[in-house]
Length: 116
Image 1 (cartoon, rainbow, N blue to C red):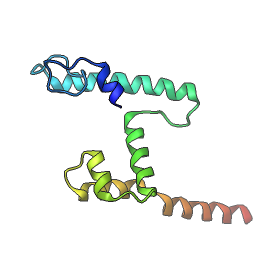
Image 2 (image 1 turned 120 degrees about the horizontal axis):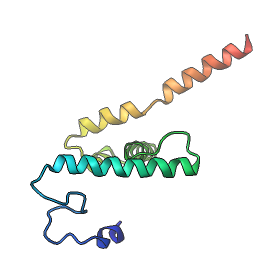
Image 3 (image 1 turned 90 degrees about the horizontal axis):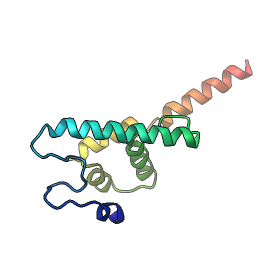
């Protein structure tokens, strides 16, 4: 990560990466345009890799949080990494990721239907 940060000249900007090129000039729009471009390129990479779902920054974020939770990383650490101000937000976010109970229930039902 440090190599990526070092790659860009950030002199004269308050941002870590040069996504916002003109500070004070519709920064939100600049950010959204860059995010769209990044996600477009990630989707292309995902297709080339043969992934079953489109690869996006959102998918990567979900993936990271899900893996962190499965590795028993403390909620406080996950919360900080996700940029959440409150651990409550992280708990809600993680709860939305945990579909294992529903997945197991669906598997049981599907398997019981196959036997009939």
